[in-house]
Amino acid sequence: MVSLGSPIAEGAEAKVYNVKLMGIDAVIKRRESKPYRERQLDLQLRSDRTKSEARITGMASSLGVNAPSVLLVDTYDIYMSRVNGIGMGRLIGGSGVKARLLETVGIYLGLLHNAGIAHGDYTPANIMVGPSGAPSVIDFGLSEITHSTESKAIDLLLMKRSLSARQYASFAAGYRRSCREAAAVLARLKEIETRGRYKTRTLVAKG
Picture 1 (tube, one colour):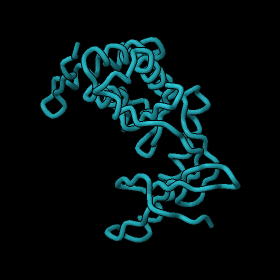
Picture 2 (cartoon, rainbow, N blue to C red; picture 1 turned 90 degrees about the horizontal axis):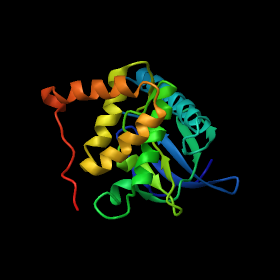
Picture 3 (cartoon, rainbow, N blue to C red; picture 1 turned 60 degrees about the vertical axis):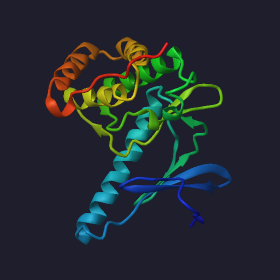
Picture 4 (cartoon, rainbow, N blue to C red; picture 1 turned 120 degrees about the horizontal axis):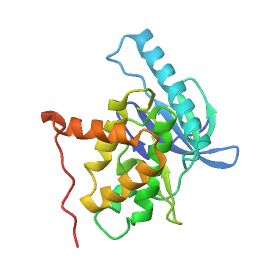
C-alpha cells in the first residue's frame, strides 16, 4: 500500500497522485467511487474502465507513441511511469510550440488511429512536452478501440479548437503523414464542422 498525498490532477472519473513504486518515480491514477451510482454498477464500471485504460495506454507505447509506461494495474488503480514536462496547453500562446512539435503530435494521433484507438480527449492539456522538447500523450481514460471515423474526427476537432490556423496546419500535416485513413477522417471532420453544435474554427494566427 503506497502513501498518497494531495492529488496532482483530478478529473470527473479519477485522481492522479505522485508515488514511489519500488524506488521508481511513478504516478497512480485511482478511479474513485461515485455514491450516486448503484454499488454493483459502480464497481463494474470502475474496474472495466481501469482495465481498458491500462490496455490502451500500453498499446500506445507499443505503436511508437511516447506515452506513460504501465507499471502495475490493480482493480481501480493504474501505476504508470511519471512523465516530466509542461502541458502543451501552457505553451500555445507563446513561442514554445514549434511546427515540428505539432507535426509529431499529429503523427502520434495518426498512429493511434491506425491501430483503431480514438483518444477521446486529444487536447493540448493531454500532451506533455519534456525538457528535450519531445511530446508525450497522456490520459487515455476516455479512449476506446473503435472503427468509427466519427470518433477519430472528433479527436482532430478537439485539437483544432485549441490551435491557431498555422499551428493546426502543422498538426494536420503530421497526421496526414502517418494516418492511412487521413482523407476519410478529415472529410468527416469537415462534415462535423458544418453541424451547429460542432461548428468551430481555428484561432486567427498571429505574426
